[in-house]
Length: 177
Ligand code: AMP
Image (cartoon, rainbow, N blue to C red; front, side):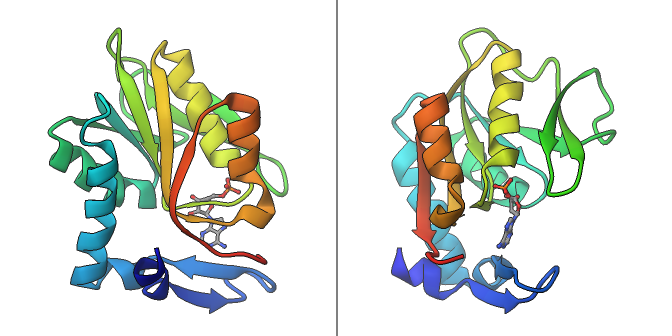
């Protein structure tokens, strides 16, 4: 959506040269932008039978928790390794150099749960793929994944839709990244 896109600022060469960092803090600070963003997700998901929203650390927490509140359902954090205090399931995923892990509480799902996963942005899709795998390990269904920004040239959204058959919903995209 072009209003939302216009409120996302770009910081060139962050965190390293050549990266165009799509910074959603400029969207968050804008009352109209924030309302429009959460409202768009509420409109889409209010009648789809979603029972839980899982947000990916850290920016997925902001949008995911606001959406879960508006839908009247629970929120589940997906966190970096070692941050969750209870028993966890862990999933490895590839970084540019090496690997990392994300985790979810083992008791985060009930039988029949239908999850929506939320993050701010999808690039290569590595983080979202690992998150989908975690929720599947819990035995729950992933209905869809939602982001504010898609970077389609990096191929993550197409890969998830094709290989995992999970739809990706994005509010805007930046081509050519
Ligand atoms: P990926 O796993 O490659 O899809 O990367 C997605 C994660 O990295 C998200 O949690 C984003 O917050 C972050 N990220 C990757 N590229 C960018 C970018 N150009 N601008 C802002 N955040 C990014």
